[in-house]
Image 1: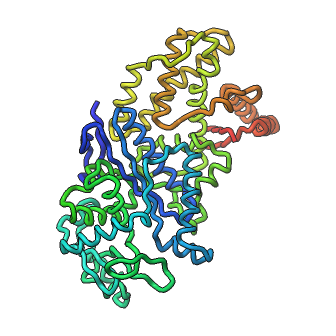
Image 2: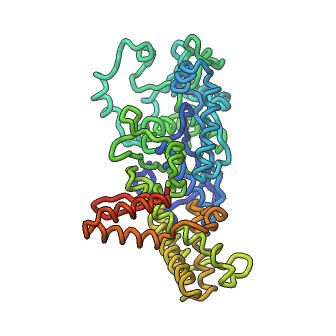
Image 3: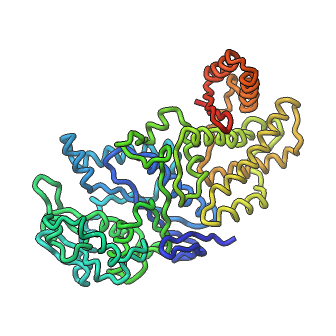
Length: 481
């Protein structure tokens, strides 16, 4: 059961082999901290959180680094609008980031380097690039000479001659930055300070680093010349990750990363998420509506991590229903374990089930396939729970049920799916999933008989119990508020 990953760099799926046996060095290009995190950030952070958890589950020692970009024009612009400072804006949204991720059950990284805390490493890297002929100063700025790096474009598959063809009519030749460059493709490593901007002293004058050099320096400072996994959103492949490779490998002469992994983007109702379209949804807005964080995790994991996903009310309702199924299975042991005479401690896992889960997920982190295994376990435990409630006994031996439950809890934990025991086991009131489905069936029969008053009454009754119904051409879905 060899783990294989799709490598953006080679455009093929490859066996996973680390630089150092048994250890994984992993870096994720994190957020630019000028605003609250949105659904796109939620997807990325959940994906890399679960990949880290899975690598640990199969025996790797993982060192996971995630940066904060805290030097950026967007941060500076917000600081100006708020009559604040770039540091104050960054600190506020870093705090908000940790609040949001805690609600989603994201484990903290081993370290969160910030660009402002890596200034020595950034300047050292620029200096080395300059000495090797890959960078040149220009009136307080420093630029990377793209054509000096023969392998430029190897990650994105872009060729300079192809990009050159359509670039001439998009270039503003009057732009002072353009006039400083030796070549239109060159990009800034260091930017001279403008009046009123935060600045750091450097051999090239007061200024601040470009975005791309920040990550190259933070990777090198925290993890060394070559890492195992460099992760990020598909929107970062070009130019950010392409430029990271050019910067780092020009200095070290070594691969920056063995595997480049990229998660797909999030759409909202089929459209790209943007504030101008009014479909921009932050993590805290979504969770404050009452959507269960575990349903959000499940929604993300039901799609292959490299493919785009579409956030819709129907999709989150389906994920909510799916989470209720898994949650009932997770709570089985707390509700019925004592009644079944389970002893204290953990039971051995079902080896065949774990092997099937691992064999599935080992295929390029196929978490949707892994979820299928979880649903099988959860549905069986839910069925047995219903039998206990109605007949006072089970069809399966208590020992076997304990093995099933412990396996479900362990594998769900690999995906970060955890039920809140105290809150969920105290169910003196409220409807079970089976009771809800029965009422939905009654409502459907009333609608068929054109008894719309009865149909509305059942809908209102369920709404009063905190159950929202969503009718569609495929039938009726529901979720708990």
